Length: 223
Length: 110
Image (cartoon, rainbow over all chains, first blue to last red):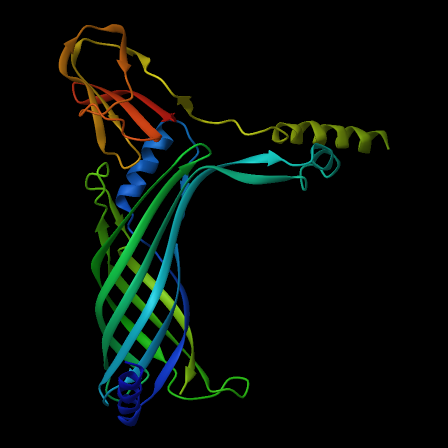
């Protein structure tokens, strides 16, 4: 399998263009409609419960040009989203009094939700003629999500895997060096269709919905 | 100097409310209990218990005509199938003619 992978890699590199592997970091504005509806219930009850405005994303990916007009991308990405009701607790009353509350206390989560997705992605992009640094495309996403709702006394977690889709516009530095190393940069502005209904015995049709705009920035080793 | 001391004392008093432990926002129950609620008007009532996925685990009152006033309905911590749905946060809602008139969020830990 490793030998076959090396052969494929060599053939891809020989096609011309570039081959690069790197680390990406970004954020998204996920829909999370069911999560927001539940947050509203808690807020209606009078609990100061807040959801994050954006998700945080990071991952590993590779990019290669298989022809003068097609760029391929593969990657593994993790996204995180959360919400909580937290309260300030005192760790040192004396320190709180002496520093007028600046020190001696910390915020502790009382009710919180942690939502994660692990995405396996494969995308193909059309390289814009005359602007090889610009490409447009997309592809399928195999996504595994988990939602964990916790309190100080209990925790409920459900997981599910589903299929999604992403589209985007990429900007890639074609060549260059950074600090003497073959490091180049790239980024993508895209939109994901990534809604997974949890399938537990007590979840109904509650969905973890990471659908929405995403922006990612990558640092790559240009091979 | 006295002014500075007065300002410092005032600041300390203002920050003292943060010197407290956690005020847990939910009632924690571990046995069947009664839920007391008040209806402003008579009408058709539905009462449901949902979990943290907003999944309805139990229907306590199903489209029943009730008079205005205070009522008490018990929940035995079981779902519609007679099974325990698990520890966690639950929402009890009372709907009068389709409009929510009572909301209770609590935690069940056995």
